Image (tube, rainbow, N blue to C red; front, side, top):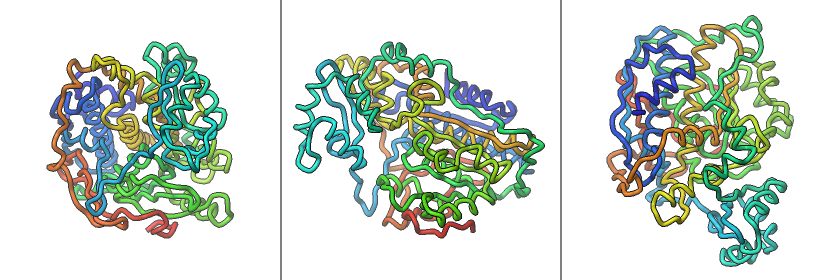
Length: 462
């Protein structure tokens, strides 16, 4: 399948009008980064889908369709998530994060947050205050990989055993995932209970999602990427953070274009602030651990009762079915669990497990999230009703695997990023990051707001 075929399939799954596809132009081919997987095509097709669907929302609001052009190299570079602040590129990985040899295989742990790192070290029988990585390497040799994975999951930690594709397919979660589509867009309740939310008519020179209000309750890469691209197409995106939770350095990059407010949902004040925002929102996106927001009273059904007609988006690690539904996960761990790390090493011939050259499961899922929002908006404006969009890193991984591998892909040389970078001022310092790769012929994508630290905005719509 070429990238245009991949885009067409995504478009069909979302049930969008086929004649809009004539306005998409996709250029380039894999490999552009050293990988045996079609990471460039995954980046290009999901970004094109998000951009074209946003333009289709604008078309429903009275504008002429416009051409969307996406270069594969630019899209792949955008999905590296590269950025610098005041000339410094942050170190995105904790010393203890990574792949460890066990008694019978390997385990990858994610230690970027202190509670995850300390929990993993204690499970290994180590003192978090004094241990070095070499101590962890020795301790892992006493564990079987699956035993550590299970023990970590029982403690709500984040670690996975390294598997081959066939080993993943044989697991109960692999079986469950094999029956799931790439994403789902489902109506909640009856259309009569939720007439179309008002989106004003647009002029041809206005951004496709102007007037759209999006609540972004996500923290780790995929969700923030999805919110950032909605902002690039003109939406008012309000990032809601808890003042009590840590964030990753990439928030400086993924907050471009967003308002950024604090709300502690365990307090009456925070809950009142969120519910006031919900009352005037069109979209609610959440990527907290499975069941986390529902336990606070902000699951899909509860938000729909507060705001009939809203589009509610659920982002998870391992999908909506199977025994791993409630497991936490990050891109690096999902790659390891599902077989991608093993396959990359096998394709290189040395058998050394390695990650893909970017967090493509996070990035592509973020763009699919934005695509799902726009597709649901198209249906909501036509049919009314409230809608639930569901995406997951593992479902995206299953799709990427089906796209097939690239012979000799690991021999590709990383492209020069310099032509694709832009500099802007931000609340974090001078931000150098990748320009958005979807080129809209009439209303170029841009971020009208600077990236700002959490809590910089009041929790109120402009």
